[in-house]
Length: 316
Image 1 (cartoon, rainbow, N blue to C red):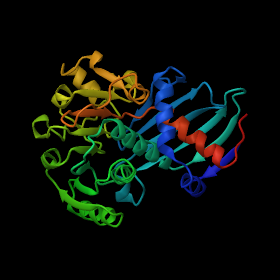
Image 2 (tube, one colour):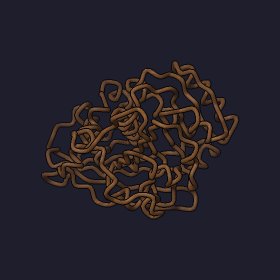
Image 3 (tube, helix red, strand yellow):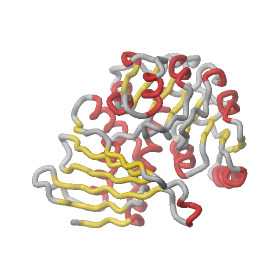
């Protein structure tokens, strides 16, 4: 079994165009060509671990991904996220590779999903990008929007003055004009492309704060206890798009909106359907749209398979 460490993974990622891989994965999922069982999950006192796994029928491997989030780790001098992806032969079940990515591939594929959602659902003219959060994902989401929109004006929300200042400096060095706020209502008032990246358990954004034409990529609510959006936002939305209908019935913003009676199941489409032209995408710049990204194993399959090929692992 080949063991691939993080530096080699980071090196080969520079030569991969991740967005088309993630798009193709979503289409395969929505067309029924991917087998993705329900998420395995451990909620611990200090953090959480998700186990996601599955395969695409045309691929040589099946993938098991373990990813954790321990949000007090930075206080201990440790990264908040960690994990690995394991590849096995679909033909023999033999282990082929262990990608010791420390959670980096999960971070990248999650950011790519947010960008894909924005590609199909964001307004043509983005006045300002709003980012809720100041962590790794808040940075990656902004970077992955660079090829999606010409907008470089960014408003970041966070709870810590110190973290907001570091985020502002970091993203200004990457070409963004950055302002910061501790009032999440400002994101809704000033931004028409918003990405939420926090582990919040109560809504940050309220429906009455949104301007017409806003797109939201909701990234942080990947477990049943998490929530970043007021369910009324989804009831106002012209388009509510899930990464996976099945997962979003159990977790994420759609699950909360369904529980609240704010939307009905028949209002929800899947991103793979939107990409393939089988469900509507944004049709005018006054629509409010929401992409609920809970993280689907098909994203892990796609990025792990691409890295495996890039480091020279032969299909078995």
